[in-house]
Image 1 (cartoon, rainbow, N blue to C red):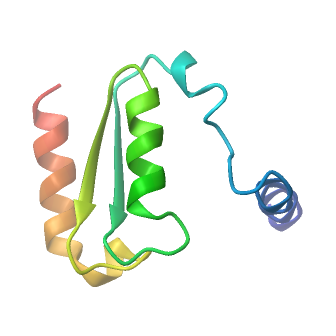
Image 2 (cartoon, rainbow, N blue to C red; image 1 turned 90 degrees about the vertical axis):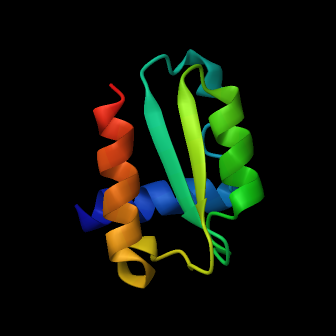
Image 3 (cartoon, rainbow, N blue to C red; image 1 turned 90 degrees about the horizontal axis):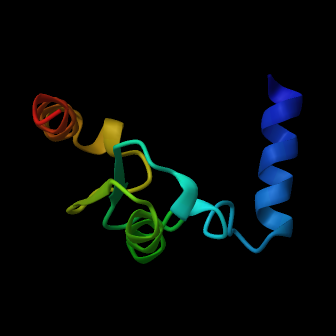
Length: 88
């Protein structure tokens, strides 16, 4: 697991952080993309662009949160996920 994670992270770095924009339009399943307002690892602008490139993605920005939305705003995150799933 660690080796595959390290390899994937290396590929992200080598690719300038662009891991899926080229093929994002091929993703046809519903997806919820959430990032924190203060996330410097997956910044809101990049995640929003990725969601826009996907066929059925929804983007939500967690106000005041960092990359660790699950830690910064766990109740808010749970509600966003439950609400999104309820629409399916």
